[in-house]
Length: 249
Length: 325
Ligand SMILES: Nc1ncnc2c1ncn2[C@@H]1O[C@H](COP(=O)(O)OP(=O)(O)OP(=O)(O)O)[C@@H](O)[C@H]1O
Ligand SMILES: [Mg+2]
Image (tube, rainbow over all chains, first blue to last red; front, side):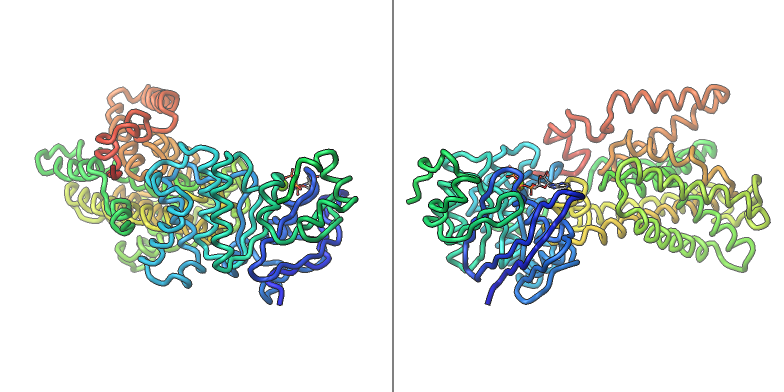
């Protein structure tokens, strides 16, 4: 059974069709990559799936729940959460306070009943991310890289079944990218399903099992990473001359 | 790593400075029997209730409530009317009026949920203006411009009266500190930083905003009721835009989002204001000028001044913050 199933999703902004008839599905335990040029509609797709934007037609099914009309926090509590391409940090708070916010969600409280379990979970995630040392710093003083790690950590505290990552590598150093890739792989080994939007294809292709390509709101290709980079339509729309640089391992 | 121990300072610490203010206010009437001075600190305590109650909504969400007189005056009138027209004790009338203010908070919070910035401010202003006008239209019950005089007093001794007001202020201070340091306050701060991110943390932000509105309204309602009965009078000035603006200024100057800041701001500035009565003709000009000067010099408020936040010792004394390491 599919964990996440998007069927003929259409979203218009006035005259602009940001998403046209998009369909795809994600199996439990899978890592799916979504690529496409700037303005293709990738973030809009995430916004529709996570309840931040209403869509015009089609349907989205999460683990047997139709999530149309559900509010963002309800969808998180059903087990699907996201990170943000444009970071939305909790400025004005300490890192530890920022990490406590998702632990107050219904889902975290029902998955980790005791306060102690919740706190251990938070500590575990922060250590995994390499953020253990900055627990008592103000979010305002963190680097771009640390903010991105904190955003992913925040999402993980809600005990998701499906995690949507919107360009998790942007603004990160090579080392930080490696670190996040390792964390994602670990989580995936433990059963977490992941959907990643990413422009840095070299890193992405190493991570994902399946890729879909979006251009002008249309799904133009779907397949294994090594198939995708051969696809003429994809090369034309997105990869262009950079094809040779990708070098899928 | 034992996180439980690490989090403890966040929930337990009290601001030593805040406690000092509360104690100093209680000690003064014990060493002095200058009724005039006691009246002044009583009024200061009432303004502190207003400023702190305002802070729990606006200081923690940064949506500026510009119509706070709605709750203060609304509850003041309701309590006054209940206790003078009906055989109801003021000790019942005030809580009932405060509950009504809290329920209106839920209503206004719901209606203004999607409004942000100036739109939110205008909406709150509008609600207060409606009530202000109503106080004239319904003059048969409200007494119109004159208001209602001869309300029941708490006691017939000014010092005892002061301690009733002081007690209410202390209770509200501790209740709000507790709330602000609990999960509720943390969530409000997260909403202030970014509402979308808070929702994607699985939090029903609408609920917490409305809850803060209700609590802010309820506490202001207690303040309004206490004000009315301690003055034994209620009039349209308690619903006026001037009162709303003063509350905003007191809390901003003290330092929004800290509870202790608005306490400090309200106490100090109200005492200054009352002391200026010796030059009554110029009082409003000097006082308002002073408020503007403070906003200009320290836009984030006294408590949030850089040199206080930057120093471990000062931030412990003022805020009760005790960061490990
Ligand atoms: N809230 C909105 N209102 C109107 N138009 C929007 C809105 N959000 C996105 N768009 C438009 O929809 C299109 C798709 O935008 P989207 O952000 O989904 O692209 P993207 O694939 O995420 O691009 P990038 O790689 O640059 O992040 C763009 O033309 C964008 O201008
Ligand atoms: Mg995008």
